[in-house]
Image 1 (tube, rainbow, N blue to C red):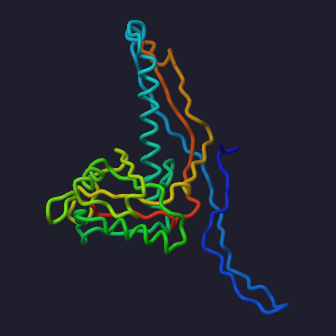
Image 2 (cartoon, rainbow, N blue to C red; image 1 turned 90 degrees about the vertical axis):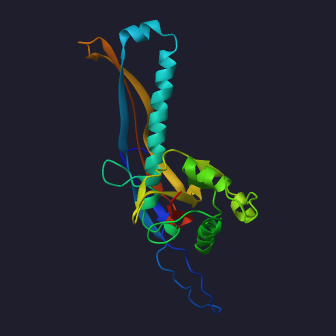
Image 3 (cartoon, helix red, strand yellow; image 1 turned 60 degrees about the horizontal axis):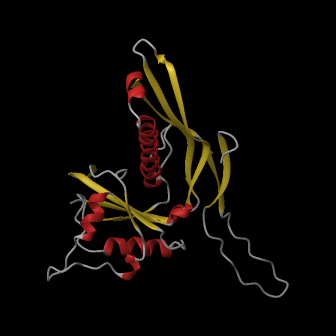
Length: 247
């Protein structure tokens, strides 16, 4: 929880390097390994209006409204944590953060996932950056079920190697499948990494408010859901983006 709308924390910028020393010799000084990162709380909100007649006549409308509003904000939080532009008032997500690693599928115009090699390459990059093992592979549903449908040369299911199978596959519609990669306009990405290194700085938790006067001329009632937060990353090299995946 952020105490103010702007909070600074220290983030690992590079691993310290230890050096050998003779007896009574000086200790080697490593370059600075930490940098300052600022959380700047941004506001996310949505408003819907409902007729008073529906509120009066429906037995489940209040619960349905709360669920719908919470899900709408949750989906956008997911999206911005992955793909946020960083142009105020939108936080910057993993895919546009500096220092994030990447693996390209296919050539300049992308390519199909025909095996698990790109995922293995991404996991290798994390290991080479001294990152902790990946905690998730985040992808669009199209990609998840495409991987599940891979077959070998004898048309048998292509089982994922153990190093890939050990990482949970999470799918969300927050990952678009209409990105541009060269001439392709149906590309998507997989984000893999140690998601414990993703930090959400929450200034105000999800709140739901009711305004009965805004639409008094039509006797509609406004329901507003809002929260304030920012996202930063403790170790950028703990993430890798698999880019250019087309169906």
